[in-house]
Image 1: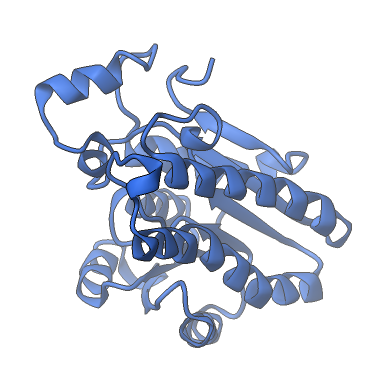
Image 2 (image 1 turned 120 degrees about the horizontal axis):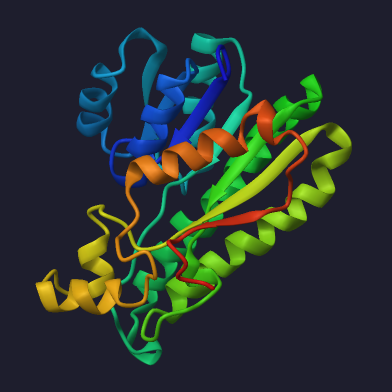
Length: 246
């Protein structure tokens, strides 16, 4: 992992921050991409000179292209792209979700991967190497009720990752996904509707190992899938879920 050049979207909090930390600890040069400039710049300080804050709206092509140019000027190129940025959804009957909320889920959870892939894949093809990791969810495998459009967005991420893996293998570009279970992040309260001991126990009762995932869990899995140790792994959606999907 030492000297790899890595971009992590949604990198200033939650799973994204855990992923940034894991790559930085492994010696990579990391671009922490986030729409929240203050949070990204503050978080980047803890990792020193090998981490740069990149401010971008992941649903906007021009914004992403500008941030990618800044990163490549700083690092000299791109080896790993982690599409982590995502929006959650409060439990809501599918027919009651507002169109604006659906559009937001689409733009951040799906369109961002389309846009960044179109920008990053040509760079990886030119160097005949690269790794893309898309953060999906157990929701795309074992859906919970009243989260239908969020579940569907993560199912899309899983299918897109597998298709990308097949298409890009000839260019020595590996593509995988991670399926985290509900985690100790700011998004947890969104999924539960309210953060109470009763709601937490309800969620925990569905996870055989009896705990939520953590940013560190997801970070370590991300580093492995993007490392040489996983050089024969592509097209996989790895569940980091404490047995939730068994």
